[in-house]
Length: 115
Image (cartoon, rainbow, N blue to C red):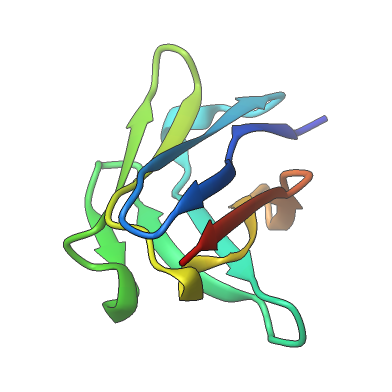
């Protein structure tokens, strides 16, 4: 059974940094792309960053040059380093993968950025 367990997040002032981590189990991790999504109150969940099995990364325009997604195929983890955080980055962040033709989500982590 695929499990994605998140850690990290919290509260920070504008301009600060946070790091999110997601540990995967029950899957052949290195074969699958991994994603980070976020959902702000009253908003739809949106894709923030993707890293393919080959390590290619893509970012939402709003976070380019501020966020970095990375993966460790030995430890089966994916990370999101978030720098220069803004209040509009406040949201619940979710780790995600589509593996074995199914969507799997982490439990969600609150990130709050204050002025």
